[in-house]
Image 1 (cartoon, rainbow, N blue to C red):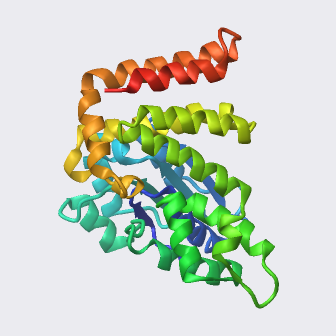
Image 2: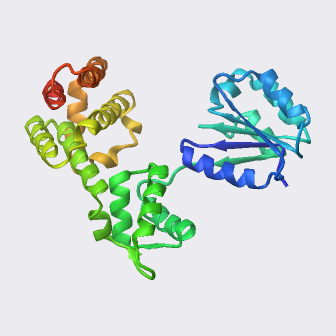
Image 3: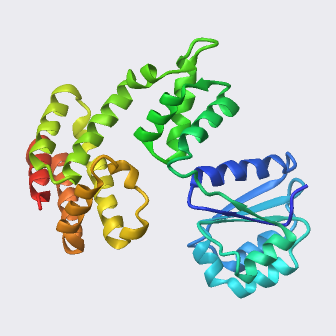
Length: 307
């Protein structure tokens, strides 16, 4: 039987959705489920939904997505509600964090449940991959293959799950997902090539980045369409490192040459990040509107990054 209040707490949306799916399965088949956005939700509307009977069906679940600001804004009123919640509806708050010392955390834990949705650490990822393949797809995966998959994709659990689903369909009965199977995947090959390019850029090796880019254009017709996405992800890593170098979580991406990534990021500096982002947006806009050649526009951007 569902409890009146749940808090799904953690930074990983995939894990939150997994836990939400478990809760939803406990709802009666004819129960109502209402989803609201935390940044736009009004407390009065949420409470009205929780306290009113479902017009059709038996029971109701109200899910508040991205609820951190919602909880901060209406903390006192929510504490009062959680202390005496509706007995005919379930409130689910999806939060990135909820410190255990806060009163609302204690109240939710008393009448409902706080469910942690923390992703595994980089070191734990291969085991997570192994367990996920076995439990969800009834597939085995070789240890070296699990490590490669973790290295290629990182801690994006949703993407890891998608790739496991595809790989599990390609293996023969009784066989495990192998290192060769992953290496032979065209998608992984292209992803790895683009990662090598951005790693060279991160290490300040502009000439090598240019060489990799020109090589990609010769071997991958889709490289132009993916370049902006990959470069934007790299710039976001640089920005995150500059904002909080001591808690930068994507060190694993640059594990072979992290000191050079750090050097390049510091050379770019906070003042230049905005300029590079604007320049990359211009590359995308100009290329899509026919101003200049996409490949040449990307090359100019790569040259502009050089510290």
